[in-house]
Length: 213
Image 1 (spheres, rainbow, N blue to C red):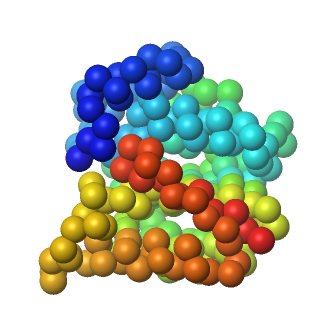
Image 2: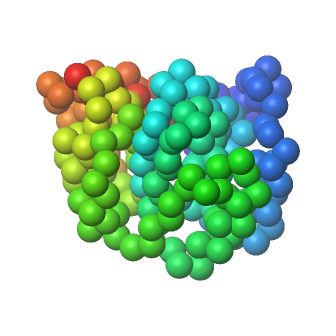
């Protein structure tokens, strides 16, 4: 679903920072070779992630849902020199694709990939995080959030993607639509949990910014 007209979306991209060359290559190859390329963050959202990371200046970043690595590289742009990004995905067939672009970037040695169920991997990472990006299976968003909050530094930022879910969150709920149901519960949780303060941005398919108190 487009919340803005295509003309406005094009105008926004044209008046935002240009997509870096490496990311443009990654973007193009994803659309050429990988299933469901709409899952890619893309130019505009990527620049938003980059800007937020540059404002936060994180040391440790956690990403849940790597896909082809585009958003990870955007988040790395604001990472401190001694920083580390830990990224989790369940699709084994994407690991080498991700690593190719990670190693072509400035941050290849600072990016750790994990393959498997994030719900099992998150407890094994013994770090405190400054920035987390959740962009994986929607039905586990609440579980991810509750696992992550105790691992956050005070003032750390949790970004949650797809929280508007093509507008389904304001439409009559279908009885078999578990993803929309969970996202509605998740959005309510973020807005009421005393551990965070939250703003929901109508960027692409909805991006929530939650600051840990």
